[in-house]
Length: 314
Image 1 (tube, helix red, strand yellow):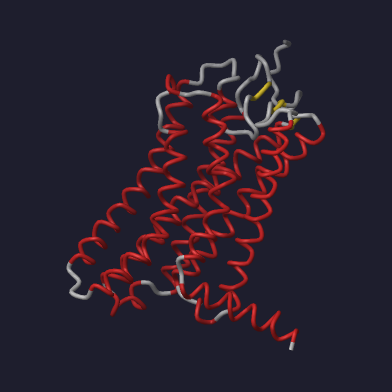
Image 2 (cartoon, helix red, strand yellow):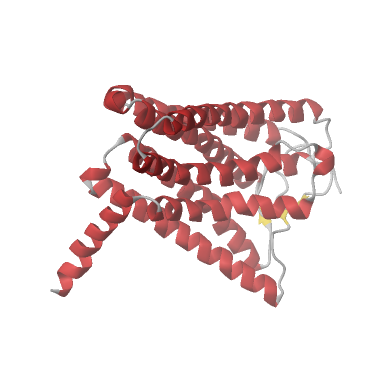
């Protein structure tokens, strides 16, 4: 293949996640269903939080930001993947590829720090309930949210810019269903060792630092819960935190599996499945986990249904 020093000359080819077989067509339909469910579930969560005054608290404000990130994440990945599959082409321009890398890393990195902010919120609510409105004031909540978006954006901008600066003189076929920096870098004909080291350092900062803060917060929460005299209070505290821990485990487990493993342990087939898990399936689970396990959300949903549907029937 001819040398292409300018990444704007030739499009990349995404090989995709599915083949054109009956079983893969069924799996593709399931992905579309998950995509639509994620959009509707997260949009409903945002709408309930905005409409119900009882949900105008720091915890639910952070949850609304998580829903925004999840909606943008699936919208970054699935529509292009679906269009390529239905049209029988995997073509994506370098600009489109760079946009996917930037948005994915911005949203993924932002979600890491946002989950850490949510863990701190739970720590303050359980360990310092009388000072909750002082420690988790509106200004701090906005700063943590803005910081999550900003840090994710800086990481996405740096990695997308450096990734597209390489010359790609080998095959431009990307064995993935979206442009992900580690997969794209393998096609570069330049020495990428320094960038791979830089990318690994970014992963440590964007994954392990927030995860350490989350583990520290929940260690303090666990110690406080075990000191509680009331069994009912213990159950309420565990119920409040279990949904957040479920989200953290699903999201961080999948991303660390992809980005923190040694290169020798990587398998293209496994990597695509795990990537689908945290880019497509986790955004579906987040609103379900928080709504099913949260009485305030269920109450707000019941109130909204009564107002907009039962009221019209009467």
